[in-house]
Amino acid sequence: MSKSGVSWRVLICFSGWCGVCLTGCDSKPTASTSPADDAGLIPVSQESQTASPTRMIPADEMRKQLGANSEAQFERSGPAYIAASLSKSGATTLEPLRGQPLKMLDLTQTKISDLTPLEGMPLEKLAMIGCPVANLKPLAGMPLVLLDASETQVSDIAPVATLSKLRELYLEKAKVGDLSPLAGVELDKLWLNFCPVEDLTPLKGKHLTELNLCNTPIRSLDVIPTMEIGTLWLRETPVTDISPLVSQKLVSLDLQGTGVKDLSPLREMKTLERLNIAGSDVTDLTPLAGLQLSRLVFSPEKITTGLEVVRGMKSLRQLDTSFEGTAPAKTPSEFWELYDSGKFKPETTP
Image (cartoon, rainbow, N blue to C red; front, top):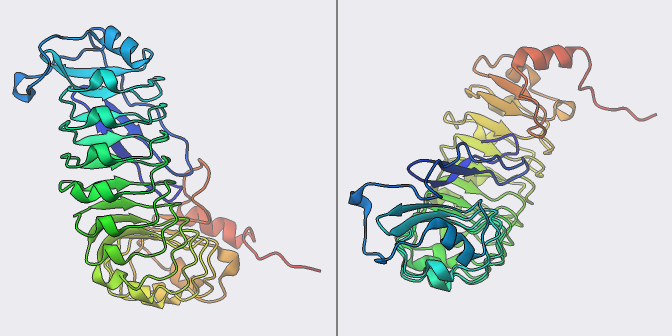
């Protein structure tokens, strides 16, 4: 989890390079390495070769046909392209890729709006962050494992119901409100932050390592007892009651900016390692006694009871008032030194 309350995720990972992207409050990092290839062509083993076009289209020619610049990079097997990163390349069309056996494709921050040329491809990973895409129908039936449609115009995710292998779905700042197509999809990670989602019923019974509901209008967590969740983000939601979490085995929980007052449902959550309650209505920290938190973010000026619980928590490695900014989180000793000097005393009015 990053300081913004979200986690790093690998969107595309080719044999010779990786493109990594962070969605949330922090800026996006650049790729960890750059491909060193022959005009953008990276040879791969014959084992990965699939039915493909017989004529090899050189990378420079492919870039030209796509309307892309030198940022466009490719991986091929024989004459066929099996992976393409068009992120920030200026690409305007996917038509030249029609019929290619692509397994991985990154369209992040391009002007691509029509996915029709992708129909029938064996895509496993597809990222289209910030694209003006609205229609996911061309993806129906694909063997996708990861789909990132964040910051797109997508509102209807009905085609996702046909993606039987999908495990990671990212819809940050999309226009998705209806989750019913997800009822039969065995997801592992689901990000819905900033989506107009109000009903979580379609998620009943799901086992998720990550569920991101930050900045959604979600009020009720009644479906949560039927689920198993590892990391749950509820930042800046209208949630006030976390009693449905009582049976969960959460590792990380973000309640920043919520109206939550009572932390007693967390009292027996021995699995919890990271907790963010900054800007919430919490005033009593005594329910945290006995937990083995490694990181706590809170608003000390609001706390009236239970500070001694946190001060005596030997498991803590990070203790701070915010996840924002680039400064590293404070150690407990650094925090208490500031606290004891009066740094976090509540402001008084004349």
